[in-house]
Length: 290
Length: 152
Image 1: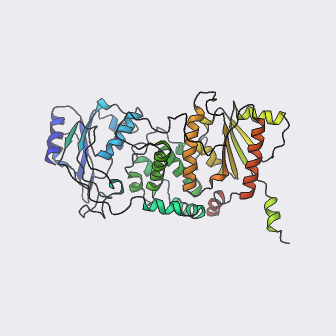
Image 2: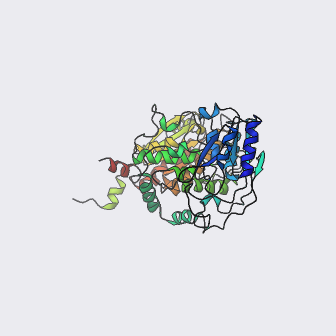
Image 3: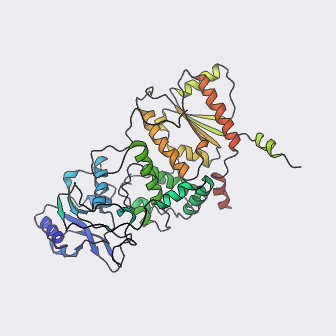
């Protein structure tokens, strides 16, 4: 932690960056912090409660953050995938950014977690993660740590739903999606949802019914998931932000599975790999087309 | 008087919406018409510049508004008027189809096909087979109507 604070202080003092985006403690747990004063660097922390995906602030949609100028951002290995995604889609220039890679020993599912990190508290996305720093990082801080063993199969729920009959699946999704209040928290928190104007807000034509009614809810959630197909960085923030506790992670995970099975694609922190939607191969499977 | 189940099913006429590309399938459908091929009258065609223009929301909207089936059709691979629109569409629809299946929407209600401008016969076949299939599946009540039920 000292290492992180010293580095942040140095970057700010040398005017290499205008602000450092990291984590600080609040009353209950940990929250994102913007530090622009070298004296404030002692606020910065990093531990297993640092759940939030900070590159979400780098989306060009956030004009107030873009106005800050050059930033340093604390990134875990998984967060770096969002940075890579934004660079891949020309939303961000690598040279305008300093990445502080942290060696992460896995995070909890909840930033207010008071218990130690273990199989019970470990976030789903950390299952099977090596916990090493990202190759994109300009600086690496922290001691190497090991991620605790997972508390089971990450995709157990997904497999369970896949085994159900279509009627059961539809009923299940209807029940879940009828809870959606269309607060769009899933979109706001997503590092890859950066459209200046979202299709859900267009009224002429009104493709997605805007009232929180299951019909529009279905369209909205299918569309959100599809727009992130092959782009989702699997940070799980949409599901964590959802006040209705809709298991959005299942949709993202299913799409990741489809992408991997059909196009051999897995999301990485390498910005040079093309996204599967938006590129194509002449011999893509078309068994479903007459 | 109760109607026997079989008769009830056969009296159902499905509404099918076809999203087709301007350059191949629309011209192919035109050929099917001018060749006076026998086609089911259940399909309504919506012409778009390219299959690459067909957003998955079009399909969802068609179902929301009461379509029982949807056809998406365009140029064969390598024939796209815009070079690669159908290749992009192919990936998008492959993913859409699997996601719909995961969410419990029967993928049999959506037919994808490649029909070129010279394949009037194939278009007639696609229209007839899709109409038959959707007729057998029955009205698509599960997706739109449960939603309506909640409004009352």
